[in-house]
Length: 147
Ligand code: IDP
Image (cartoon, rainbow, N blue to C red; front, side, top):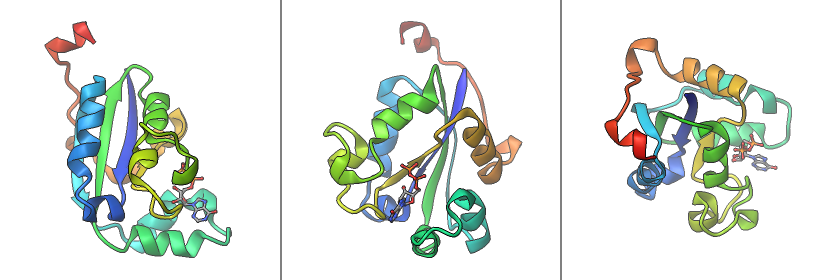
């Protein structure tokens, strides 16, 4: 069973999209095994987005992701990392297909609603950055035999 880290960004929280985002992944058949609202510190933001350090948009990205609370989640399911990325859509909302979260709700590249891990390695890294082991409850649902 694969685990992925998803996060509703400050724009998604302010636009009341937490429930919509959670609903999409629940209805897909994935299992929510960790979740919390938090205010990201500049240090955590710089570590989380470390791969973008030095790029022209890095400072704005850190400023934006720390501009208000986020909703951090860990989801579990078969192929959850890649499937979640498909459901999120392309980075630029204008290029994201309708039916994806960014395609349906996003307009602006920097305010693109949601983050999702892009590989097994980044999922592991991001989950451990945002969650302690005792904040994650992995469990099976009886309905999963139908999913
Ligand atoms: P992803 O979120 O689709 O995985 P990444 O390339 O990892 O995309 O970039 C992380 C975040 O940084 C994006 O979601 C977006 O908010 C922001 N970003 C990426 N590239 C640009 C850019 O060229 N201008 C402004 N913001 C950007």
